[in-house]
Length: 319
Image (cartoon, rainbow, N blue to C red; front, side):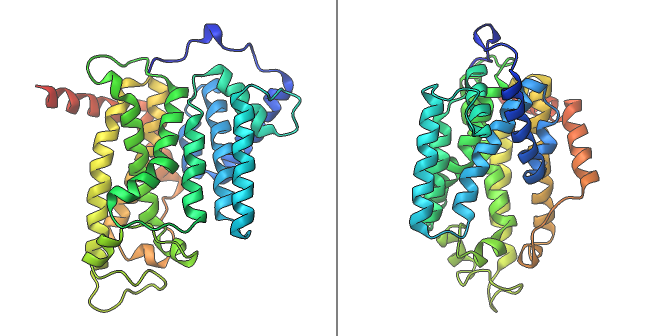
C-alpha cells in the first residue's frame, strides 16, 4: 500500500469539519488513554483522521458493551452499518448533524482508508452480542482480526508506507493486522475478570481446559488444581510472537507514524510484562501503566529507537 497522495485530497477543512474533528479528538482524549498517547505524536491531519476512526469505532464498541437488550443492539449496529454505507457513498456533507460521520467522511476523502475494515469491526461486535465463544486460537483469531486487525489496516490507510521497500513492502497490511492481534490478545488477558462479569469468555476453550481454568474468572482466586499462571504465560508467549511479527511494520512508516505505532504498541507490551510478572493481578482488576511510564514509552517511540531495532533485526533475518 502506498502512502496517501495529497494532490487528490480535499482542501483545508472548513469550520464545520474542524468542529467535527474537535469533537472526535475530545472523545478520543476522554475514552482512549493508551490510544491518545500514540496519536498525539502525529501531524494534525493524521491525528484528526485517527480520532475520527476512533470515535466511530468507539460508537460501535459502546453499542456492544451497553446494557440494551440484544435485539436493540442488533438494530443499532445495523443502523451504524447503514451510516457507514452513506459515508462510503459520499452522501455525508459538512452540515450533517452527526460530527463523527462528518469527520470520518472528510478523513476518507483525505486518506485512502479502507472503510470495509469498519464493517469488519461491526461483524466482530455482532459476535459479542450473540455471545459467541471460541474453541481454539484459530477461532479466536477470526474475532481478533475483526475488532483489532481491521483497526490496524484502517490505521495504515492514514499512516501510509512511505519508507516501505523490498520484498516486505506488500506485507505491510499483514503486519498491521498482526500487530492488532497482539494488542487485542493483551486486552483479553488484561480484562478477563471484567469480561467474565459481563458474561464473556474470550480465551480459547481448549487452552482453558489444558490449564484447568474452564470455570471462569468470577473471583480473585481460581479453583484448586488450576494453573492460572500457566495459562497466562501460555497466552503471553503467543502475544509476544505476534508483537515480534507485527513490529516489522515500524521501519515502513515515516518517523511520526512509526512513533505513534511504537508508543501504542509499547504501552501494551509493558502491560504484557506486568501481567507476566503477576498473572493473578488481572483477577483483582484492570492492570494499567502510570502516566509517567506511558510518557516514557511515547518519547522512546518518537526517538525511533524501536523502529531502528526492528529494522536491524529484520535485516539480520534476511541474511
